[in-house]
Image: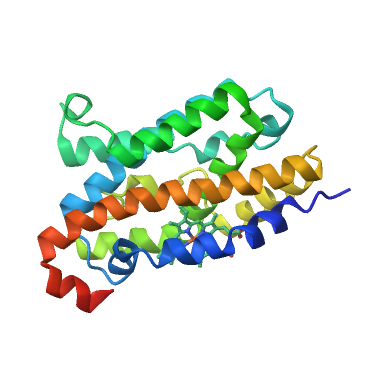
Length: 224
Ligand code: HEM
């Protein structure tokens, strides 16, 4: 019997998705207004987020909910390490630290991993389904705007083990529907997914400040 979790997640985060698309940084990014500094900062923040998330998922892979959604082919940490090497060179592990908003995001993942691991699903859904959807378009925009070859500097978006994104997303949604979750847990997972959207938006807003500095306020206002 289906728990309708895929539908609940999609409809329950629809408003948050619209809000995320409307953050100035995202509106600029989709129009190709993105520079190397912003993109590398964006990806470095995601490096810290995915390292925390994937450590937590690995830790809970025997958990009935997290184990049912264990798809290591989604893992992004190694791809993000390649991007960090590209932008920051060999010394990248010594040069980078999470931004203030990123700290809040990883603290939240750490806390739910310790106390309510089922809720990690809200974070996995929000990030991975987004990366396989709008993220694929963002990769093309970034590649063209920064004149990068193939996935150079955008390895993050390169799901080598998932050639057919649509088929995988269907499989992921089916797996969501089969999970052993009651209505209360489903509602909590949807609430956590909304929280994940919010935490992502906070990172995007930080980047907006950097983008405004490099573009100038007047140009930025014309774009958003
Ligand atoms: C301008 C930015 C964005 C664009 C253009 C965009 C675009 C899209 C599109 C077209 C889909 C539908 C894909 C499909 O049905 O197969 C989608 C789905 C999704 N996006 Fe985004 N997106 C953006 C930003 C974000 C952000 C910032 C997040 C979260 C951090 C996110 C998370 C998601 C999720 C979780 C889904 C899956 C919905 C579902 O089918 O359950 N998106 N996005």
